[in-house]
Length: 134
Image (cartoon, rainbow, N blue to C red; front, side, top):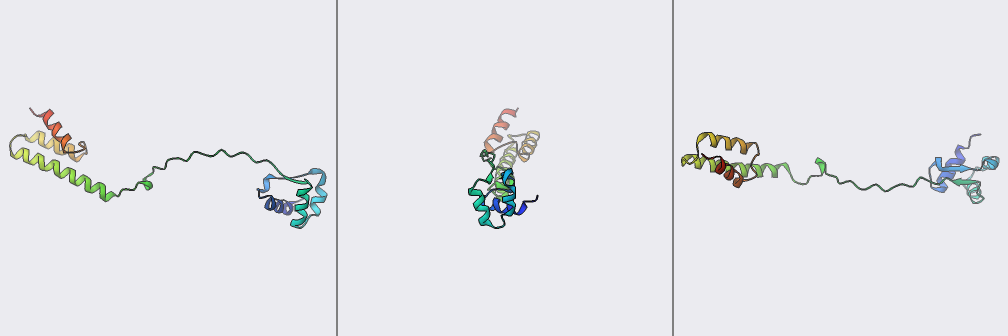
């Protein structure tokens, strides 16, 4: 006994999925005779067709979206910040080396660390030089 059309109409009326529509097994002949939506509504009223209780959905906690696509700043901005920082450090190191207050080995090391992003700003580079000066 296929009751797919009745099940589809009942699901549409009850506003649930077809899997949640439940037919009374004693009144299947009556349900089979129902061919219009009004017939299905009458059977729902008579409790021949019911909807199964659904599984309570637990509201999921919204995750913080922190992926690469959600970052607001531009690469251009980061690059400009890097350029400004590295220029300051290199200028400072060059001036110190010209003034002979910094030897070549330490100057080269500071430049390499700066390029690698070891220093956040010029102040940190100065502190490194102060600590490692002989």
